[in-house]
Length: 367
Ligand SMILES: *[C@@H]1O[C@H](CO)[C@@H](O)[C@H](O)[C@H]1NC(C)=O
Ligand SMILES: *[C@@H]1O[C@H](CO)[C@@H](O)[C@H](O)[C@H]1NC(C)=O
Image (cartoon, rainbow, N blue to C red; front, side, top):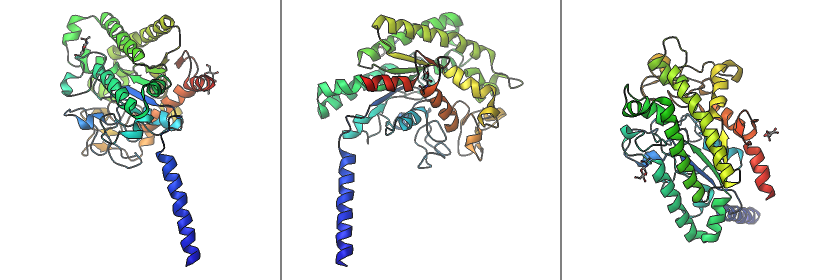
């Protein structure tokens, strides 16, 4: 009895030490900030009055809790997997009330499904956090963290952080090509629209730099014409929709050019381009080589390619999500997200420009 008492007392003391060390501020770990759209939203839209949400089953079916979290995935999304691979805790949605105190030091996710580079993108979703507002929240975040650790340490935390931004897809899918003869398509030819987007995106990234970001992963758009939603709407025989593929092939190279221009202006490799077009095209073109049974049919949905409407509790649902490149009509499955993150980490210059994330981590740890 005495023996078991002292053992459990010892155990309690040990657990207390563990708990306390877990609670201590982890200013040594690198913070991670995320901006952009549904490809990287970790649940902000759950707190908004919007139709762009992923808060009902079967979203999250393969998440550790097996419950919907607002992520547009069956399980983890790209930021989650980057955090996991870097040995960090996942960054929480900025609007999550649990994101406070020392949790703030891990970073924050400001992304909001439906947004684009332009303010008029995604207006049909009503209340979403447009990119200008995401940057305002980033400023507010820094004020809040300053109260915890002071302005000097806050500046250091932000300067040393890793940042991910994913924008652009919605400016085509949910703006220029949303309806035939959309306002933007009457205003601009496609090449002029792309140039306009790039010039507006440049302002966003410049602001991000002004707010302290010093290592920013910038993804291009994926092969937008190949997602099940576009196959259902625009494709007769399952070939990728030509106009959206053309948009991606105009946008992505100009994005890389713009990032290179910004870097040389600043005189440092701040912005890192991730060629998500290539990363996604690899497994979309040859799904079997990556262990998928299909890259055309979404796991969750209805209609041709399961590409019509939303993924809901009433939709068709595939039994094994790992066999599908697409989880819903627009968003990759967790397994597809893992392939993308692997290339971000270790891809060569066909995928990452001017360097991959492994190289960044090695460089930054030496400084
Ligand atoms: C978008 O809206 C923000 C906030 O209202 C504004 O500051 C910004 O200039 C707008 N951008 C464009 C391109 O109109
Ligand atoms: C990252 O990129 C560099 C340079 O392109 C390459 O040599 C290296 O093999 C890549 N992968 C890793 C894990 O660093």
